[in-house]
Length: 352
Image (cartoon, rainbow, N blue to C red; front, side, top):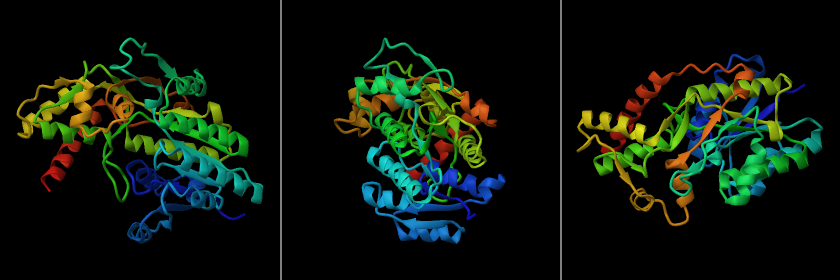
């Protein structure tokens, strides 16, 4: 039997690049036997991957859903790390896997990257919303996303639902990786910084002091990118070994190892920045949602994204990951250390 083929999207990004690096260094025999290919948009990216012994295929981008479907049909597994907000791209990848199943009769699998912001409420628009602790093993996350989708359109959440519905129609087995805020230096060949924390640091430097929205009480989980990459590797190994693990509507996998509030985060960044001489003041300042949208460059219509990702409140308990045998290694001390390292990296970029 020929080696199973897996397609990785987002290989030039923070999460996808890190997961790809983890798979390539894996000691799991089932993963080492895989035929791994990454899709990229530019030839120079493909060349860099090729120099590092990684198969690469060019594609036109996530908007070309017909091409994505054709590409996915050639693979047994798709590991989608590019974005959780492009509904049609995710749908096309699942449909493509379904097309391949019809041809070869073999089970296909789809690992989707989403996020816990799907379960968050904004402290601005929903100040009285209860902070519910969701368990991926004990609660019906699918039903919660369905309920929330009826309340308000949030693209990343809608994509989850379309993925599950499309997978049920095609027979593809889907798994939804739902991490919280991801921190730490990436493991990949391209983008090694995450999004939210570097974004916050850039605007802290520009303002000369830290800023947070409202009372800063938004509570968000976090996970180190290295621990998260190991979880992807572990999940994939279980799939390849034929283990009986949850998928579909029961196949949500949380991964937070601890949590922070936006006020606490900005207090830490204030100390780091002021000590380095980059800030006029270490004291965080509360600003309104409207001020944040204007200062941080969120165009009209993206208020929900701003609220959910910078003033959201969510709590999740990862049980599925530990049932797989996940053992995260990073601690609260690593959180503090990485904040300082990320500050240095962003500050160096600002000087260029």
